[in-house]
Length: 181
Image 1 (cartoon, helix red, strand yellow):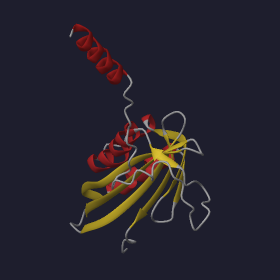
Image 2 (spheres, rainbow, N blue to C red):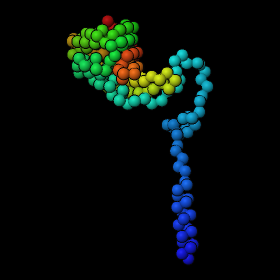
Image 3 (tube, rainbow, N blue to C red):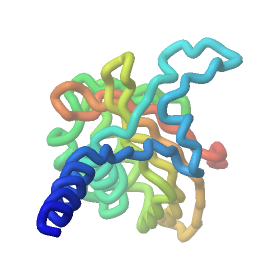
Image 4 (cartoon, rainbow, N blue to C red):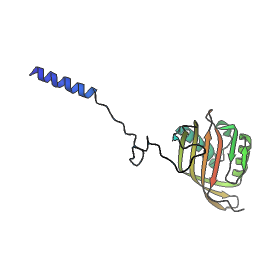
């Protein structure tokens, strides 16, 4: 009886030690093939089609610097998160070069509003595997009140590139409409 009990114990231990756990790499929606299968796209991408989730700290940096500081009209710390060489393409088709120019433009723009209320729909840090670059994508709604009390609501999308030093060095900004003058 002792031999049978010993044999069962050894067999149970051997079985427990040799169980391989299979991890599921299922993509959202339950499709486990999406994480490992490449898909032929109907177009060749100019930049990349190889992305993965990026560093969430970059999302926090962009939301604080670009959004919360704009909303609170406190843009003096811009040089802590924006590269000196930033190139910003704004939704009004104006390109700004350099952190000093960007900060001056934003301060001038924000001075025209007595109130700004931002609401973030989504933020996503992403990393291009083949290009070795970090990006942050932001979708948001902004409600601005100007000095005359006129309220303007717009939907915005920003795409920020983060350089090797962890600073934003590129901005592409889009809004849902061109504001009436």
